[in-house]
Image (cartoon, rainbow, N blue to C red):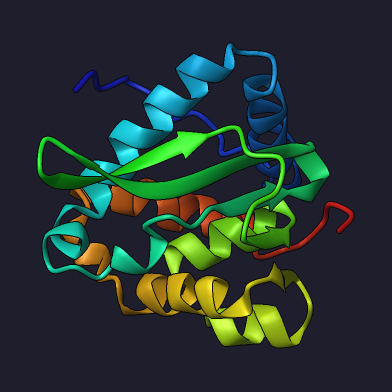
Length: 172
């Protein structure tokens, strides 16, 4: 790691929020195939143990769309068998079985576990539509996920980003 003889000032939380939202908006302009490939690789690594334990079997033949409303970004995921092993696949689906919708800040907080998932849903910061059994199963899976399974740098980066989003300075 490169160490500098001086420290750079931290940007204000509102700027971090704007930049992270801008990055997600930018992702809309990258080819769908690249978006899906990156998301699939990341999700399969993160949920490898859950897939192995059968915790994602509920997504076989089902499609769950995650929509980040303030970034106008959405991606659907499912679980399919590939070479006799289940794998998460991200696909373009017009009619998903279930949708979880919210702003980027809510998804960041959910991912970093800085706010209880039920709180985000009760406050309507995250909304479930369609087959709520599928959406609830996914919510419960993320609730049970242990952040210590993530690489330390990813876990700490996610937690730092969530702290920046705690101020909620961007419009919902």
